[in-house]
Image (spheres, each protein chain N blue to C red):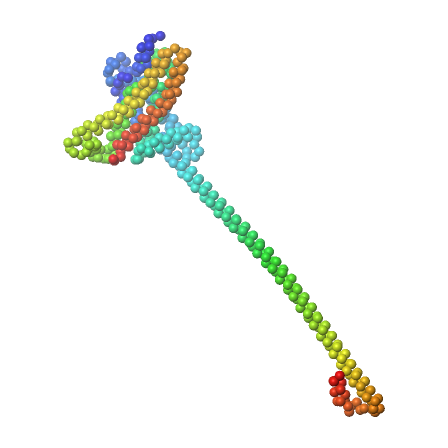
Length: 157
Length: 259
């Protein structure tokens, strides 16, 4: 371990040269590359996070659409069933109305026929009454003279 | 077979220029230390530059990955202690760490290989390959660090601020205390420089000596203490490099920041 001034000075100078070289050619490109990569990774992570959020949003949206579709389908089914009930009810009502109408018509017809028959019967009875009375009193009753009387009689039957 | 004494001395003698200079004459050059540290330094810088030149922000290759880990580790260490611009301190710390690490790593090369080869080739009589076990190399670094401490002190606090701190710190601004303050601060600066260099040198010098002593054992037993010491040394190599780097950063941060 002998002293050597020139070695000491030479080592100091050598050291400075190496520091200079490292500072000039090694440190900046490496730290820059590392910094750039750091930023790239940060961006990549940010992107992946965004993509994840977008995926979540899309998922939520899809769920919402699906739920809405289900709801609409249910609504439509309900509407259809309501409508079908309505149609059946309408049909039933119109059938009932038709039946009532036909029954009423038939009844009216029957009433008309009954009245006609009753009228005919009444007229026939008046004639028979006149004829019977004529025979009883053996005298021709003037049908024309007694029309009013006979009609009154027939109406009372 | 030389005597054990001569063997050890041979292993701890540097290749001095000019040849045959007085052992106590400091105005000589340790050529082996210079050559090894230049080769290692160029290897380090070349290796780092190779990685830096191919650096991309995309997927890094193996080399880039390794160097980036190193840069990241050094940058984080600097970030923790030094709260100023890192344009210079970062590369400084990386260079210190790399250089000291490679210096120390030379201790793991079997002690006889290089000196034997150099002697056999007739190039030189002595050749030490562990720069950190030559006190001049660690001092070369720590003297540079001392200069940087002063430069960063002036940079951070201004010339006046740095000067004022020399005279008024740590005891106070009383004019009577100026001289004690100055003396204490100078001692502190000197102590930082010396302790930084001696910590590294002492550890590596002792380690090298132990490797040399192990090499004196019979060949069939050497692998047991040699292996154990080498494995232990794997811990010491990066630890000393890390210590040198961290202490440099801390010293610069102390000089740069206002208290």
